[in-house]
Length: 207
Image 1: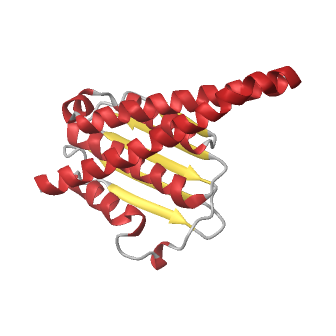
Image 2 (image 1 turned 60 degrees about the horizontal axis):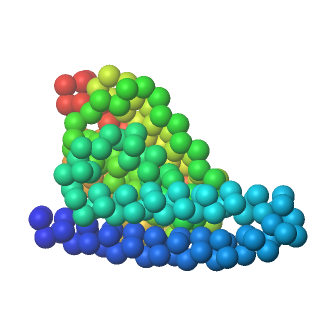
């Protein structure tokens, strides 16, 4: 179990390193051309400045995520709201797709549940970035006393869940994570109609 956890952490660190490198490369290209663009069209220059802001903000979020992967104790101390905000910023900077994040209620939950919600959100966003071709993404977290629901929705290509090969898209890993805390994971998707991932959790003391 420890070896599997370490291997997954190393995989995530490699992916984050690649993502940070790609984002900073894009930011550097934009920074190089902004002075010439600004001379030609200040309005277009402002648009490029906003894109540069998103890229640098995303790179910073990716770096923070990579540091969390290298220091599990820091990940354990972080609040779920901060972790989801960090994932959202990193996604926007890397994929350059609009993402809306809404969090309702006071998210007071166990460490195990927090880590599962974080990992499921992380895996779902990775899938969207790699496979969906989405133009819009929505994350909604609803917290109530001793229960919580996470929704991650995109308007991408979608897929047929029954036709997915075992282990593909990390669906089995997400389901295993959900099962480890007694939560329910649902994946609703159709070809051409996007995908919605829902994670529902209730504390052990709640019927």
